[in-house]
Image (cartoon, rainbow, N blue to C red):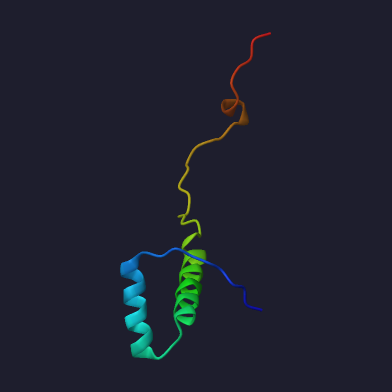
Length: 71
């Protein structure tokens, strides 16, 4: 199901989209929908946390992680 939205887009972007729309013979809404879908797809994969294997060679104590409290 499609939804209707209203968006304000920079004039230069609209002009570029209109030019592309004519070359590819596609609707403006189809171009925008495709671009947003690609952006969201790339965004989901780039939000992954990049990590590497740990090299900790010591001992860890939970006691060191908490501040001392006064009594």
